[in-house]
Length: 375
Ligand SMILES: Nc1ncnc2c1ncn2[C@@H]1O[C@H](COP(=O)(O)OS(=O)(=O)O)[C@@H](OP(=O)(O)O)[C@H]1O
Image (tube, rainbow, N blue to C red):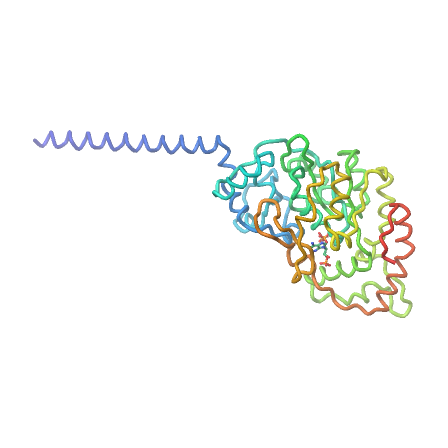
């Protein structure tokens, strides 16, 4: 009797251990299957795709380290807050070759669709400048195009991280299929002495886009950005003028120097012919985004997909916004660091700057073959 009780308990134990082995196997197989279908990779990314892309983070090098760039080679030891800061390009969540309706339906069902197709290529086109010209707006507008894939954050490879090597750079790029263009934007390339030769080492056929804006408003915009991070900053006039009595402009101040477009372009023209450049008017990108996007798409050899129907003017923001950015069904404007109110600068200081820039602007109009009408 006692012995048969033992046997029953012994058999029960055997059955239980078999069941637990069975369930463990099922779990392992399910995990393998899940990974084989590529869903493993994308599981954490769905979190990012559900967030609104924070354009402010993407343009702030202090908040986006190269480790946090999309598809950066090293993802080890990330903290949760770093993960949250890695906002991926909306278009990087879904393979772009997927028919629109299929992508939309996958997305609306909350099914993460991993982009494991295509190849990481060096960019064929780069937005190289200028800082505060409207480079983020241009990149986000371009991203609506199904044949454009771009890194969300600024890689700063040709100015800050060149020693990491070309493979590191290529690894940051999103995967593209044949016929799709890989792009990135880092506005500081335009004013970096070494950037042209370095870009040429990567690809001398690269197309280069420069968004230019009246250098006076650009300088004020630049100053406004620095002031927002450092409220104790001296006044604009203190920084722009060597001394107030002579009214001489301080060209060592980066906010002034960046606006000497002719000088920076000269450096680039040592390595690339003029035909490789497209100069986008920062002012027209605001007043007529569709018109300016038409020129950009032609230059990149793309079908004119991005058009009037993609934009609306947001009265509160005072800027054009996207009706449906890539990967989202809701209208979206750029972040609050884009289109900030500028501080009041004394008109004589602005006039002094205007006079200073005039000859440089005219030289730039000649070199680029375009009159931007800043004077
Ligand atoms: N559609 C739209 N929405 C918001 N802002 C727009 C837009 N188009 C152009 N701009 C102008 O872009 C300016 C910022 O330029 P960048 O994106 O090149 O800045 S950055 O260098 O990346 O920091 C930013 O400068 P500020 O107005 O001084 O903030 C804007 O004037």
